[in-house]
Amino acid sequence: MANLEQHVSVYSQALNLRTQRHQVLASNIANADTPNYKARDFNFTTAMQNALSGRAQAGGIALATTSAGHISGGSGGGAAQLQFRKETQSAVDGNTVDMDVERAQITDNAMQYQILTQLIGDKFKGIRSALASTNS
Amino acid sequence: MSLFTVFQVSSSAMTAQSMRLNAVASNLANADSVVSADGKPYRAKQVVFEATPMGNTGELSKGVRVRQVVDDASPPRMVYDPKNPVADEKGYVAFPNVNVVEEMTNMISASRSYQTNVEVMNTAKTMLLRTLSIGQG
Image (cartoon, rainbow over all chains, first blue to last red; front, side, top):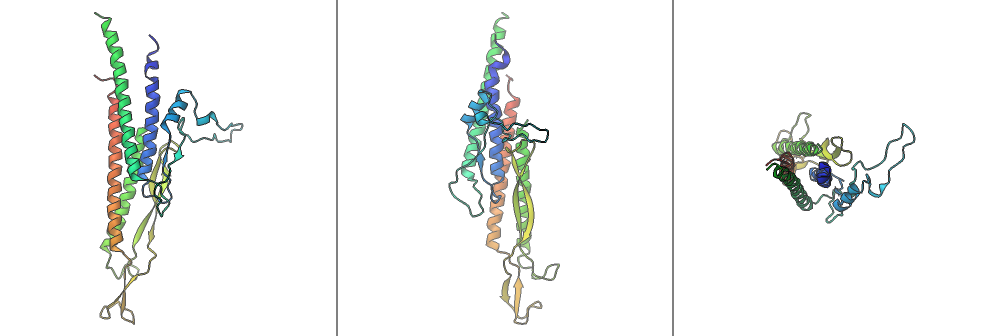
């Protein structure tokens, strides 16, 4: 039997990304009335591919730090690369948050998160039943 | 656990929205206050929101804070009422520049935004509870 952690590592990476996406979407909703705020999101598929291939940033590009005073560049979002959402209806105050889109996305994200937790639970259940069957 | 940052973000938005509601309340309450503390008619107050980074998650989480409360720059509403003791020499009284319709829509918008943020918080809570129940049963 392979390392137990291997069984759930894909799920846990996906959970991490779902958590990050929830943060981004919550920020969008929180700033629905902030002037000049631009709604942000990231492509989950790309982020997941980056996470699985071990690339911290999309494209694998990070600024080299050759001095102690250098600041490591990067979005800080790990595998997720934040992008601005395409504007559908422009507002006078420069805000691009579309509440309908954000609400739909955050519900979708939460559902996907719950599916993942269910899958992890089922995985452990399977392992547990495999362990129990050797007892008899 | 970075999901807890969502609580910070949503609660910052709720604080900001309640401050906006507070401004609406004082504007509506003072819609007819022709004399305020400085002797001039009351001026409508508007809050200005600003996005601010939250938690230690870098760019991911942006909360809201009220940058400043500004006085509405629009001119006072002039009403002809020569009997009023504060009327000017032409008989006009300067009423506050509170636009009641604007304030009502502001109020509805603030309360809806508040509700949505409560829902976001609830969603995050459900997600956290689901995470806690992994491996049970």
